[in-house]
Every structure is written in C-alpha cells, then in structure tokens.
Image (cartoon, rainbow, N blue to C red; front, side, top):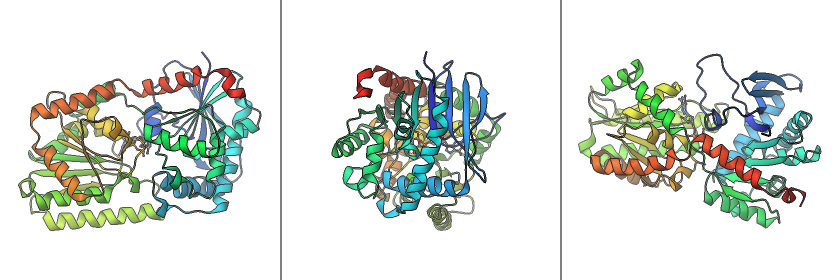
Length: 449
Ligand code: GDG
C-alpha cells in the first residue's frame, strides 16, 4: 500500500497522556487509518527565531514531521491571513475580514517554504492529502518543486458563493492554486457547487465533490455510556436537581452563533414561562484564537449576556446559564452529552460541526435527547431528525427549544434513530477511506492533462 502523506496546519503530535485538544481535524483523523504508513507534516504550533528544518517523531506506523514558524511568519500566515482574512470570508462574514497584501505574501511564502521542506521527503508513489484553507497554495508549491504525486485537498470549512469569494483581492490567484490539486473535497454539496462555480470562472477543471466528515459513533457512544458514571458527570447530574439540561459545546468562535444562542435561550425563558426553573443551560466554550481582537470582544459580549440573563431570570436557588470558557476532557464531555435532554448547536455557518454528530452518538437509545441544530451547519444536510432552526432569529431558537423540551419519547426515538443511522455509516475512518478511494480512482492521465 502506498504511503499516505497528510499535510495540515497543525499536527496532532502524540502526547504521553491525557491533554485535551479541541479542534475538528485532529479528532476526525485520529484512528482513521489503522496500520497504514503515514507521514504527517505541518506546523509544530511553536515559533523559533530563525527558519529551521523539520523535527521528526515516530509513533507506531505514523511519522510526524513538524516545522516551527518565525514570529513574523506566525503573525502573517496564521494569525492574520488565515484567521483574520480567510476564516471570516469563508464563513460568509465579509464585514469581519481584514485585507492586507503583505499578510497574503507571508501566507504564500510559508506555503512555499513548507512545500520545499516536504518535497525531498516524498517518495514517487506517495499519496498526498492536504487539509484546509491555510494550505490552499500547497499543491501548486509542490508542483513548482517538481513533485508529480497525486495530491488531494479537503476543505473543512464552508466555501461561500462565488460573488462573495471574489471580494478577496487575491481570489483569482487562490483559485488558480487550487487548480494544482487532483481532487478537492468539501463538507457539503452546497460548498462543492460554490467552489466548482468559482473554479469554472477561471477555467480550472479540478473534480470537486462532497465528502462529509464523520465521527466514530460507536466508540463515542461507549465513552459516553462509561462517562455518565464518572465523578464529573455525577456531580453535574446531582447539581441539576431533576432539571432538564440544555448543552452547548463549541470553540469560542464567532462562527458558532453563541450570542444568538444565549438570546434564544433568554427568549425561551421570556416566552415560555413553564420552562423557568425547570431547565439549566450549560455552555462549554474553550477560549480560542485569543490574540485576535474580535475573539476577545466576543468573550466580553458573552460574559455580559450570560450575566444579564442570570440577573434577569435567576432566582436564589436557580442559575439559568452556566458558562465556562475552559476546555473539558473529551470523555467527560461525552458523559455530559448523554445527560443533556437537548443538544443546542447554532452556528451562523459551519463546515460540518462535529459536536452535532457527537451529541447524537452519545445518546441513550432508550431515552435519547433532542438535537436543536442550525440550518447553516454542514451537518444539517445529513441530520434531518434534528429540529432545524435559523439561528439569526432568537424566537426560532426559543420555539425549537420549547418543542425539544416537550417532545414525547416515541418522537424522540424516531428522530434520534434517523440521525443515528446516518452517522453510524460514516465514521471518521469511512470518511478518510472514501476520500482516498476517490483520489486513487482518478485516471493517471488526468494529472498529466
Ligand atoms: C472545523 C470546522 C468541521 C470542543 N470543545 C471541547 C472539545 N471540543 C471538540 C468537539 C469537536 C471539536 O472540538 C470541534 O469540532 P467542530 O466540528 O465542532 O468545529 P471546529 O473546531 O470549528 O472544526 C468544522 C471540523 O473542522 C471537522 O472537519 O466540522 O465545521 O470549523 O470534536 O467535541 N473537546 C474537548 N474539550 C472541549 O472543551 N476535549
């Protein structure tokens, strides 16, 4: 079997023990390919004073090659162009995007430097799989270095309609870069259509298809069933005093619709008095990208909203919102999901949203909770059993929550079974295999052309 070379911005280095690691890609790829020889290449997450060669670690059949960035590279490539230009633009938030030519140049130069470090490590029959928007130009840079291997690309985040993407001053160059891949995967059919239309606009002819990311439903379900007995889950359950738990779990990011979610919960308490004192909303939102001013502002906004809602609706023995910005270990989270009567997931745009799938996976099949899900998460294309809402309307969130809290057992079971059937047939491993099989199936001639 040919070796698989994975390239991603961050590399999930094996850790001695424990250590939480929020973030979709590492979770999705972990354990996806047992036994396969893998080289995983990318940024170490650290900076060094001078550009330096990769460091290597081997764990089982996987070798990790990681490279430090200089501080200037980290700022231009990662903090600025990736997080402050591409992230908002790809999530359809043009008004939040910052445009600076020099950041784009730094981003491009880092891609070129990384490609020049990987190129000498490649074998002729390697398959290369590049991940996410940080690395759009990576294949073009490898090609420029003479590499002829098959190279696939997977975009974990949404791709906006062409008329929005073209606001990016370098849109044409980025699309031309994408033309160097042999296959491009997106999360949803809608994203694939948008990207294919943009590529058609510049005459590039790369196959683009949807490969929705999956979760390992069976193992997450086992973890959840085990974790409900853990001290943390017992503490949570005891503290609820019989109240229904509404749970949100997200990186603290403006794409996740957290202020909208808080306002939707406030609307539930205002409009449906029967739920007051009978529900508790727990939001876990580990701080993310804290050096970007918008993320700090979001945290302040949520601190204020949570305080206001608790002040307005709280009672001496009932706090409506519990809000924590620390990360929680994955196994503990699985137990929390299983305890939650409602999983509340309200992104304004999201590539997929693994939390929605994890919530479904964690439920007790005999007595499952209800997922209230934004129509604008990629997962909404698949999870038709969820109550789908438009997160821009707090009243719609409130009505979705009310319906979820009142739903009878037969309906909860039927909706859960429909969604569970979908996630059970698309594990992280299935997803990776599907993408790689499609990359393998391309006729060799297509590359030369
Ligand atoms: C990107 C795309 C796409 C969250 N808080 C904690 C924690 N998490 C875990 C969740 C989940 C993962 O992090 C987050 O994945 P998402 O998919 O929800 O979102 P992004 O991080 O934005 O991921 C997304 C994904 O890539 C994969 O393609 O679905 O659309 O934006 O697994 O459970 N994990 C732990 N503690 C926390 O506090 N341990």
